[in-house]
Amino acid sequence: MTNPALTSGVDHVGLTVPDLAATRAFFTDCLGWTPLGENPVYPAAFVTDGVTRVTLWQVKAPENHVSFDRHWNVGLHHLAFRVADLATLLAIHGRVTKWSGAGVEFAPERNGAGPKIHCMIREPGGNRIEFTYTPQDSALLAYG
Image 1 (tube, one colour):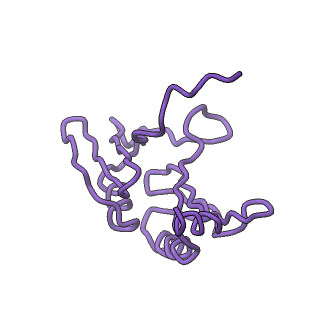
Image 2: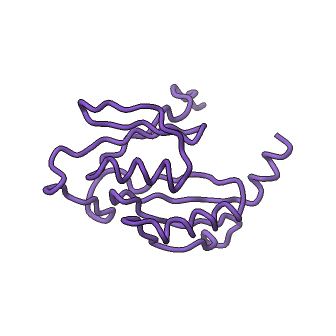
């Protein structure tokens, strides 16, 4: 017998970044997210894609920050966002390749044997973000 989960999903994800303005612009201008607000005292910015909320926190001393290394540090390995279709995945990849300060770790490809297709990028602050499309997701959404 298993116990029922005591939680019900992700409320928000918080990312620490070296340049709050650059990462906020990446989410809002490159990915089309909506700003929800900010706290200039912390400083922090809050953004959403309409489903997921992300809090962006400015590191205290950007010139001294230590970048995350997924092979050596404990912490967020990557953040993954689902997209509705392959065209959107390809559009995101195209935008990121042209976005100053962002980088592509790998272009859209099958995840293992598939059917999921994904790509991995780094936003301007260095956080790894994966975008995924699973063909059956669209069918489920159409009939959901």
